[in-house]
Length: 238
Image (cartoon, rainbow, N blue to C red; front, side, top):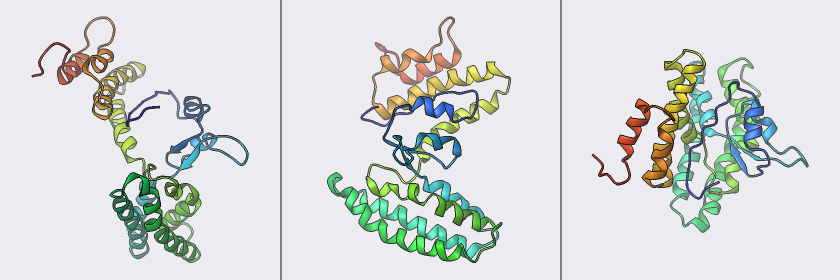
């Protein structure tokens, strides 16, 4: 879609699989998301064409963090394995781009091998309803997607960057709970916010960034605020 990182929001009134499936129709690259079943129809299944699923280690890590309350020892071991994966990723990121995938695989594969052996052993002895069992089960069930980052160094270990940007929409939505009108104002505000982020990530010029921030008709206070922040072509910034 672009050479640089960009943020795109697409609003759907209901949280159903039709939304992401329509948005990414025909796409056959990598898609990184949590393990929610609404994304399942995006991914390739056997001979069917589709996207390649990339798991999120931050979602896996959260389960071990929560499991500390009832099984601190096992939870800390799981968190330790995940920490080592992130350390391997940081080290590999310093390698030249042409060697980055090979270096990350060299450093992370032994950690994953030990982690998988530990998961298989511990899953046989923990109580099935315990929080740690949920953490172990999630990691084992999502193992193929969670280890797909080994394919290409450009793949991230988590989708935290997207989650952080999406949080702005969620906060705005809950602060204006007045039906469809509140949704419309939230999206207007987020259009301005997305332009700010798009300018920072994609290095666009001010003319392209400020154009979508003011709704048609009378000036909107959010649009005016965004224009002041970004600057107007032909004027010096404050």
